[in-house]
Length: 173
Image 1: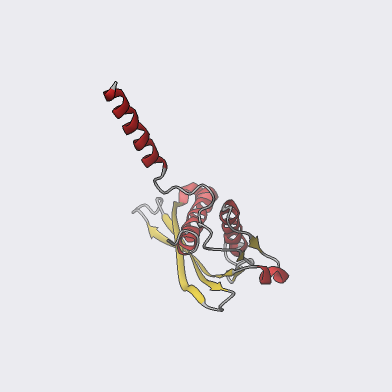
Image 2: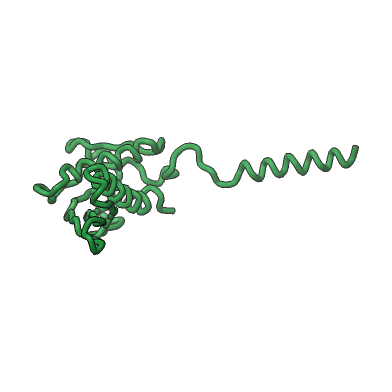
């Protein structure tokens, strides 16, 4: 009987230990972010092969921020005063270059690179929490993959930029 009791107490203790291993079920930011003003990112790459990069990055960020139950996102110009922080961004450059080419010049691999400048500010203090003029994302594709490969490479580059921004804001511990 004593063994069963010791075993049961050990099992309960282990369960409590596992259950308290630091998981937060409310939101990813643990409430430290507050409400965010997120206007559409400017896009200085007009006329390039891909368009609307600024709005696309903004939409990706919006989806991530809205999933966090501890924050609200404001986008209207007259809603800025409701936010605690602001995240401003500009897509500076989009480039597409040949990475490799075989001797027959049939197997060409290309790289797309998207470069942004990002600023994250505390609206209450006016302090810049972080600023980076060189947030870069890239992706590769082969010429034979056509437009689908190109689009996948652009999405990969945008995903890298998204992760870098989230790492410095929401995921910052």
